[in-house]
Picture (cartoon, rainbow, N blue to C red):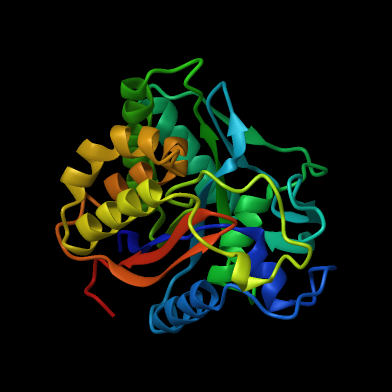
Length: 295
C-alpha cells in the first residue's frame, strides 16, 4: 500500500511555550504563560491521537544551510539543546529517533529533481531548537521517529523565485518518498507568522501583561494569512507570500510552510485554526490540514 501524508501542521516553535509547560527535560522553571498557544497545541494533539501515523517530518528555519537541504542521518540522537537567543528559558535534554530510511529516500528523490541534498551523519551534531520545540509540542511522548530537514535559503544567495522553486521540488520529493515507503506521515512546518520581536525581555519572562504584537501592521498581515488559509485559499496565500514575508518580517522566508502546502497539493479545504497568539511580539498560529477530512 502506498504511503500517505495524513496531516500537515503549522507548528510554531517559540521556546517560551516549552518553558511555560515545565516538562522534565527542560532545566528552567516557569510559573505560567502563553496559555492560548499551549492549549491550542493540546487540541491539535487530541486530533492527532485519532490518526494512525508512523513518522513526523519537520522542516525548521533554525537549521539553516546555504548549500542544499540537509537531513539527519543518525538513527538516534541524545544531547542538550540550548536556544542561543533565550538560553535562560530553553535548555532541553532531548532524546529522539530518526527514520533514516525515509530521510535517505527524500534526499535521493530531491537529487533526482535537481536539488542538492546531504545527510548529516555526525552523531555529535546538536539538533536545533526549532526542530525540538515543534516536535515536542506536537508529540511530547517522543515515541515517533522524525525526519528533520534543514532550511536552505538566504536572500543573499537565492532569489525569492529560486527559493520557491526549491520548496516545490522538495515537496515533490517528499511526496514521492512517502508514497514509496508505505508509511503514514505527519508534516510539520516549524515557523511563526510575523516575526519582528522585542529587543528587551521582561524581568519575569512569563509576565503576560507585557505580551502583545510588535505592531498593528504585523497583526493585520497575520490575520490576512490566517483568513486565507481558513477559507482554503492556499494558492492566493502562496501568491501573496512574498509581500507578506517582506512586510511582516515573516518566518515564511524559511520555506517550510510553502514546502508543506505544496506537499499537501495546495489544499482547497479549510485549515483548522487551533490558536493564535503572540510571543515577545511575534505572531504565531497553530493550524492543521487533514487530507482525509477535518477532525
